[in-house]
Image 1 (cartoon, rainbow, N blue to C red):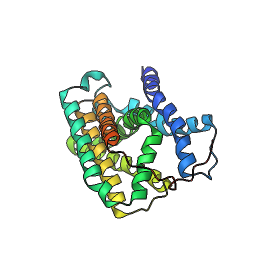
Image 2 (image 1 turned 60 degrees about the vertical axis):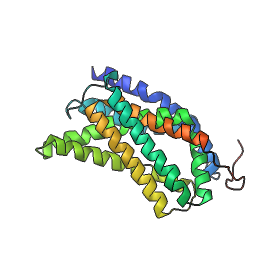
Image 3 (image 1 turned 180 degrees about the vertical axis):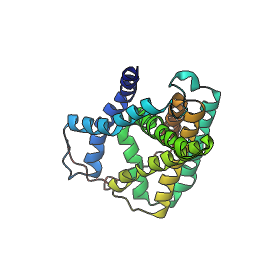
Length: 246
């Protein structure tokens, strides 16, 4: 039975991984023009090595940690509302504060990075792969571990959610450094705080409604942002990037 569950989870994350492998080639060309691009199969293997073990971890520990079996039952009014709240809080912070406090080159590179990823990569990789890794796999394992150390399930859930959210935020930092932008306190606070917020929202939904609800929340985060970025385009300077030809 677990073999079937593992195969289902791998099939779930496969589209996002494929899309990311194609998209990251564009990002390497733009932001790391001197770096040799590894073959397609090598990049695929790297993503599988990073994601599949967490999918397996989730299959073995989600029920032991007290989480429900993944299904579409968690997609309801509550998960939809919380997903929209999470997305709108981020949009308000990004367009109402962050974009006004950092230099133009940083904004242009951030916007360009998202454009090169494409909305489908953000939906399938960010919305699905990252939730399988950080909620289904990592959070399930941490909560299971916490239940054996702490004699309070709610505290174990809170710690598991927070730790998974913090790690989720930290893994996004290398991408910021790779963009070769000016690293400021404003930029780091924005990246860490918003990613932790998304992680906590998705973690709470994973606990209360299931994996599908967490995925929905993360997908709405990217969909709402995509809608607003279409309305708030930032003109790109041709001198910002040293783009390597294909």
